[in-house]
Length: 534
Image: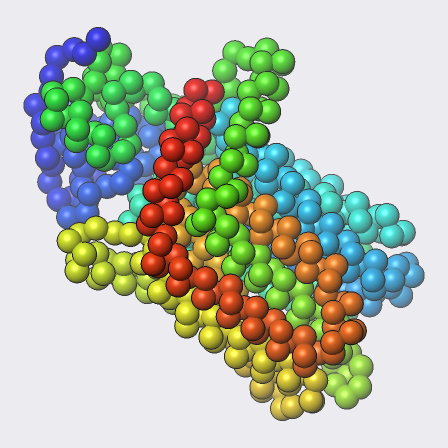
C-alpha cells in the first residue's frame, strides 16, 4: 500500500551523503558535479555507495591487493620450470599441461563461486580464495611428482577464481557508473602487474634458492592476507530489495515519482533511519544468509548456478570472452617461446635476463590501461554530447581497432625477432606492444560488459571468465604442438592474423550491437528477477 507522498526534490549538483541531513532535504534525484548518480544510492548510512571516501579507499586497496596476489601466484608456477625439472624430474610437457588445468580450474571456480554473492555475501568468496591460495602454495612447495604439479595448480586456480568476477561486483557496489572506467582500469592494471611481476619474482627467488621457496613465499603471503581480509575487509553486500518501491534504476524511479509513488510505509525513508552497523558487524561473514535449511540453501544455490550460464549467448558476453580469452592464449605462447628458445643457442639467456623481460610488459600494460580506460571515459562523454546526451556501451569499441593493430605488430616483432635472432630491442618492444594489447583488450572487454548489463555484472562477467579461461586452456594444450609443427615465425604470423580478426569483431557490434542487446532484454530481465527472489 502506498503511503504519504514526498515532495519531489532535485538536489544540488554536488550531493554528498551526510547522516545528519534532515530527510526532507535529501533530493530524490541525487547528482554530483552535475552528473546524475547511477545507480541511485539509498538514504541508508550502511549503503556502500554512501561510505566516506576513506572507507571506499581502504576497501578498494584491499580488493586490488588480493587481485594482484592471486594473479601473481597463478602465473608464477611456470617461471622456475628448470628448477622443478632438475629437482623432481617432472617433464616440461607435464608442467605445461598443469597450466591447462589451471585455466579449467579458474573457469570452474568462478562459476561455482558466483551464487555465494547473493546467498552469503562477497567476503566469504575472498576468504575461500585465500584459503585455496594457501593450500595450493604449500602443495607447490612440496611438489615431488607430476600429480603434485597438477593438484597444486587446480587449487591455485580456485584462488584466482575468487577475484575473476567477484571483485568487479564489489567495485560496482561502492563506485558509481561514471567512476567505473578508472576503477576497472586499476583492476586490470593490478591483474597485469600480478601476471608479469609474479614470474619475475619467481625467477629471482628460484635463482637464489630453488622453486620450493616460490611456493613457501606464496603460502606466507596468503596467510598474511588471510588475516588482513578477515579482520579489516568490510562486507559490501547491501540488501536493496527491502525498499519495495525504490529502484536503483533511474528511469523507473522517475516514472514512480511522476505517479506520486516513492515508497510505502516500510521504506518511505529509503533506509534513512537505519542504525549504523558496528565495526564487528561491518566485517561479519554471511550477511546475506537467510534462514535456509541445508536442502533449501543447496536448492537455491543450484538454481542460481544454472541461471548464471543463461547469459553465455549474449553477443557482448561472447565478444568480451573471445578477445579476453585470446589474450590468455597469446600469453601462453610467448611464455612457452621464452622457455623453449631463449635459454638455448643463439640467445643463452639467464633466468635473471628472462625474468627482466617482464619489465617492458609492465610498461606496455600501463599504457594499455590508460588508453582503454581513462581515454575511453573522455571519449564516451564527448560522443554522448553529440548524441543528445545518450551513451551507448558500444562507443568504447572504437578503441579496439588501434589495440588490435598494435598488438599484431608486436606479435610479429616478437615472433620474427626470436625466429631470426634479431636485435634484442625488437623483441623487447614487441613484448611491450603485446602487453599493451593484453591490458587494453581486457579493459575494453570488462567495461563493455559492465556498461551493457549493469544489473547483472557478476553473472555476465562469470560467463566472460568461463569463455576466457576455456579458450586459454585450449590454446595451452595446442601451444607446444603448434610451435613444433609450424615453427616460431609462422605461428606468430597466424596469431597476429587471429588477433586482428577477434579485435575487429568490434565492427559488427558497432553496427548491430544495440539491436543485438535489445534481443537479449527478455532474458536479461528474467535473470535479474530470478536473482532478486533468492
